[in-house]
Image 1 (cartoon, one colour):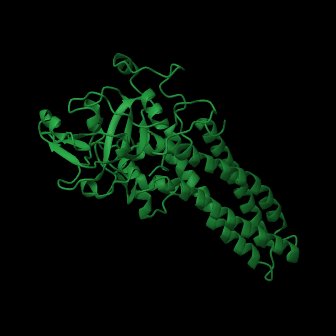
Image 2 (cartoon, one colour):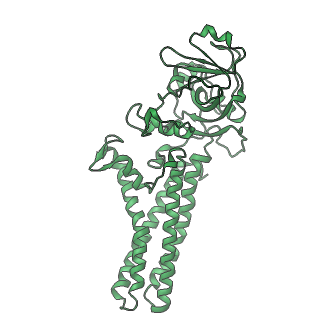
Image 3 (cartoon, helix red, strand yellow):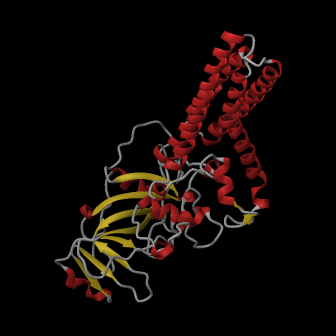
Length: 393
């Protein structure tokens, strides 16, 4: 299926962009021929059409050339994502090549809009080319054969262009709406209302930056956003999100690591508390993604959740948990900063995003008793994140 097969869909994109580029070059040559043979009373039409082509097809042509260059030579030119060549950083170069350099503040909270920006720009360029096609038809009607050849070529060019737009939309839809790592079939799965979506671990901040534990958010640790997308995409895994010291009923971000199989089951139902735990029964969360590595018993899937703490009991010694019988949450203030909290009820969990490690250490998982799916795989439908270079954030 074109939607699921990432490499096949990517190859379609390459071929369609190549066809559209060749069509542009032919249209450009025909336009130049029309300009050279046009008379004074008809030259205005080819000039305007040429300007419209430069403002749409030529920009796409340059962006595609830059994309190919970065794909094959980017790692040689830029040693890190923060290094600049002249005044251009690797991140900005990728944004130019993918037509996603037009960004706004809302993308910090909704990174899925980055690919929508690319799709919108491509639609805008098609509208501009359609205007050029209309002008060419008017020109051919008045001053034929000037504009006739271009109009015919432009009409045929719309076929691959429309197919390209469809595949571009599928490219966006795949990662943000149709990533289902627990099934390679087309069977319908009903997810819990609180489950926002699965995302591959490979697109998180630490996996996309060449600098260890460097947050892409300019505000760093001073950032007050608790949007789950922002936390995952723009902040390092070592960023902590502790609650305030005084108020009850705080909404906080918590992190929980479990196995692939358990995560797939949670997505269809809810997080369920353990009957035992070192600070009592309940559902345990760390205050940072990295801290789940040494707090979890199962590995491979990370749950990033918004949690209502309700009435909270803070403790500094695990033996104090028994005094919190009438509280909704027990919050343990770790002496080394590795805080964690235990919520009593699944109803306290407002929503979650599940991050899937698509390339897990299988011997380690087997050693820890993490069983695979019935197919023998931990991830049945992985996303090839390399095909989204420059389009994630």
